[in-house]
Image 1 (cartoon, helix red, strand yellow):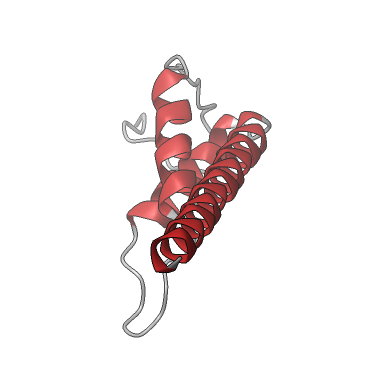
Image 2: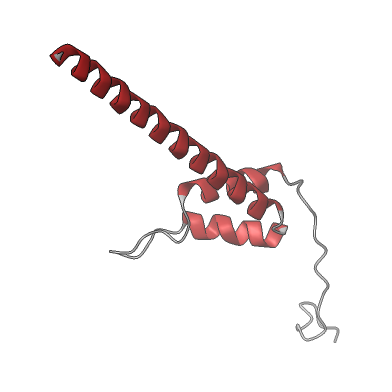
Length: 101
């Protein structure tokens, strides 16, 4: 009789542990898919700002602005973006380095 109760309690406890693991896994997958969809809509400039925020050390006693999953996804997304050459127009307000006499 005692062993029967112990076996039933063990089976119930095992089922609770397995169910808890399934719930936590599904929450983690949902979090990752939410982060990926958020990052996929970001522009290249937003990705660069996100990487900068992730690389900046938090103030003493404060938490980081973003979690590790977000930082990893932003870094991966920015690394996947092709490099772009940007033409910077010359402004007329700058003095001429070679003035004519």
